[in-house]
Length: 344
Image 1 (cartoon, rainbow, N blue to C red):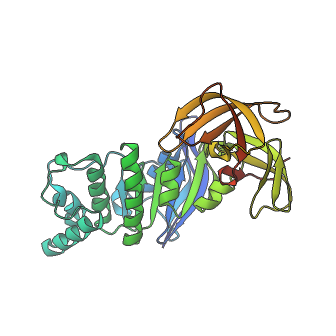
Image 2 (tube, rainbow, N blue to C red; image 1 turned 90 degrees about the vertical axis):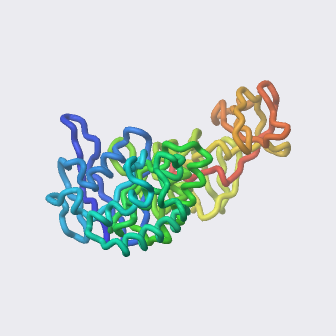
Image 3 (cartoon, rainbow, N blue to C red; image 1 turned 45 degrees about the horizontal axis):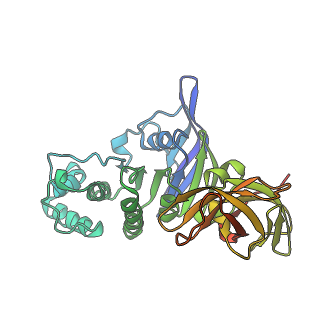
């Protein structure tokens, strides 16, 4: 069983929100639509659900065109950013709602609700009022409700974005576990890189209504399709380099890279591509400093940059981190470097 999206287009008057998108989600696969706000990813998800009418193209399930199939007959489960739980029902009543609508008997409903409460880590919560739950608990209930009727496809639209960062990180791990345990086929929308790479088997990067790259998370992260994708994925600096025998040489020095053929390339440098290191080959003056949870991010003005960038991002350990005005030495770290397509 699989979802096929063929040249799907959604227009609002003269504005094209989704433009000729092709994408497949296979049985048991989790695919994340990753992109900035306004890129069309939620519109695409809603068109798959039947909530938006396509202007062109088709949505198919196992080859069957769904254009004439209403939302409630597509067999898809939906989870939205705010959960959209029924406040007048308790947790068990929310989870059982879809089962009741399908005529599932009381005994089977009770068994299925208990199974899902255990799956999402809420055993014993069945009689709780949903208004008494935390935001994270409510999203777990929303997920359990969507999974209860065993949908052939689960659609998740920014399911964790309303939560604080620490809770979002924990729930993304839990959600990945739940989806795998349930064997769910899912299409998820998110703007969060970490969330997409934690949850998805494949990531589809979307910009300006089009899908720019599709692939396994590690591949997309390490080999962005072009500069625009690289910059969205956190590469603040892009510069040409030449690779010989696994060593890439650029205006910022040399760094060893794995599995990169010889020839011209473009390197995308994330903030972690340059680290404060007393033995580093680059020297510069710290212009700005921002504390993160486990590191310090610096903006460094390079001395004698020549053909390279005048300013770069770099990271340092929290303890003893340099401040504005300090002179530091920097070294390249391959873990923070992405390799783009061949340089022109």
